[in-house]
Image (cartoon, rainbow, N blue to C red; front, side, top):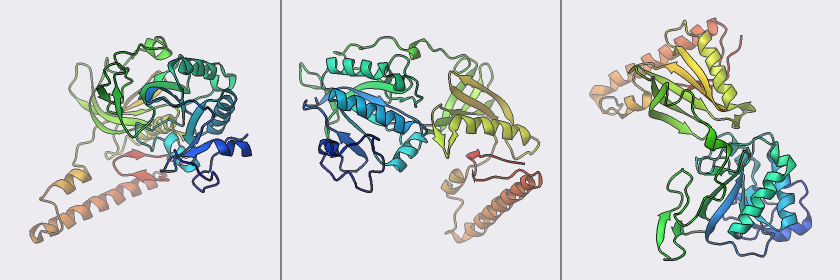
Length: 352
């Protein structure tokens, strides 16, 4: 981290109680994504436990203010995403999986410090009632919606985890999304609310077989019912994520309502079922047969360069576009209008 002028245009989010004296404690990364408050004089170790605090698009300022006050009064170092636009993208699921939900990162100076800090955070009455986004690379602290932790590198650029006795490389950090502890570290908090959760449907009645699309806010799979080989499309939305002010779980639930309304059209996938696992929402849709645009473009027999193939390729594109426009008109005639849509991906809200 380097010193900076915090009034940079990249910094559009500050704690509400930021004082001039706090300016002296600021540092910033070279990419100008994070603002770091260096309240302690302790040396941050190369590796160890770090604490991540998540949030939603609704409560991020409240959470930042609470963490700032707590860390300042207890001389704890932390950093946070200080550009509001970047943060909103993160909380909409538009960041990569590693970064998703990691609004605030707290750097304890030791294992004892880590345990004390995380308890202070958990006992904060404001943080206790806030919603957040689950961080896939971390472990939840007890039953908190916003407090997560993991063991990893605390300082770069080295990405390796070293055995403190042999000084040898054990494994490279950030290689796997799964929560992982080195062999010489015991789990500091063996029990949390996630440990007791079990699936009712997923991998029991509904068997995912292939990932089609994945992002932090949810994913799309091919799946089948246990005992059957007939495939369908399984869509998932994680709680906490919002886009344009709408929860992603609500958007997918709205899609279920819409495709039920539009099942009479043969170009709309049929609704099969929907269900929830904990707070995650799942929608099962008919798998439509056909060739995707990407697969079509990748086929060497379809191109605009070869003179022998150009005419057929143009006609194929013309037919597909005409067919798409015809289907949109059919929906318009039924007074179903799209505010926005992505072909082959999803339907957004419709209205009468």
